Amino acid sequence: MVNRTAATSSMRGLALGDAFGETWFFHAADVLDQALAERRLPPGPWPWTDDTAMALSIMQTLLRYGHIDQDALATAFAQSYEQDPNRSYGPSMHRVLRAIGAGEDWATVTRASFDGMGSWGNGAAMRVAPLGAWFADDLDTVVTEAARSAEVTHAHPEAVAGAVAVAVAAALSVTGVPGGELLEEVLARTPDSEVASRLRRAARLPPTADPRHVAGMIGCGREISAPDTVPYAIWCAAAGLDDLTAALWTTALPGGDIDTTCAIVGGIVAARTGLAGVPTDWLDACEPLPGWADQAD
Ligand code: 8NA
Ligand code: MG
Ligand code: MG
Ligand code: MG
Image (tube, rainbow, N blue to C red; front, side, top):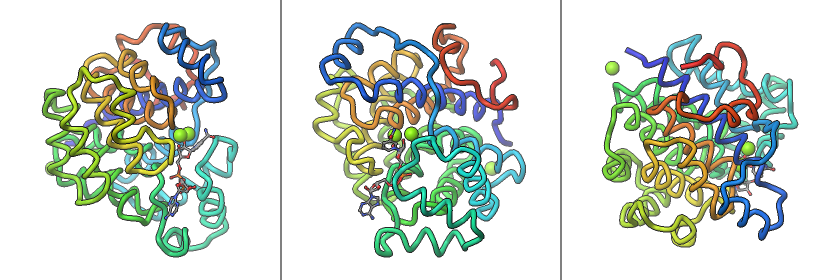
């Protein structure tokens, strides 16, 4: 049984987080601090970015095949990139997605990135929460399908570990795990990695901690790597599992890769809460999704 409703909610929460988070870039640090502290909503429209574009490709692949067909996903990523390359993609993605679009083998292109190491960027994690919600009933499948979705563009084990952790968190969010247990449950399924070791540190920090302190301990995406992004985002999701917009405000506070930390948190939390409680000014500001994904709860 797949959970299409939870996956669609997760997709919408991911897009909302991405679009909300992206609006905070390009502000002077003091302006950002004050606006976030006062929870002053930025004026719309809020366009979404690569995080959402790539998550939509994952959803389309799941809707069509029921699992991650890696060739189809590679094609979907490349076509979406070609339609709109100006979605603030990660630096290596331009070359990778253009090469795939030109007919090169995705596995060869992806593995060759960064002198043959593959990318450890947070791009595989930023897009995967809806997949976790889709397979929420079956955590073994969540792990294997998340890894398969990551490998298409991100060959480094840290990027794969980050994607697995986020997908498992989204699945657990759907199944109702208490916030206090989320980090330990995610850790139990995350491959041994720097992502896992920072998750372990995050699990020792109480949900009442100041997110700026947490970011100081484990990062908040300034390096746009999976280890520097995923543990922070999952800590924020665990601390705010029942209130989507409150969780997004909290997540944004320390700055960093805000569109991506908020996309991850939005995808995990909305998988549980849906978007029914989100104020209309948020929903009106966010760039709409394609019709199949933008339905109400
Ligand atoms: P990526 O594969 O280019 O990885 C991101 C970055 O991580 C790389 O450009 C490198 O700096 C670094 N990196 C990754 N792997 C290695 C390695 N093996 N050795 C050395 N450095 C490495 O792209 P991605 O898809 O993972 O990136 C996702 C991020 O890009 C998200 O934050 C997304 O929102 C987007 N992004 C957008 C903006 C923006 O302008 N809004 C800014 C940063 C990132
Ligand atoms: Mg982005
Ligand atoms: Mg099953
Ligand atoms: Mg980003």
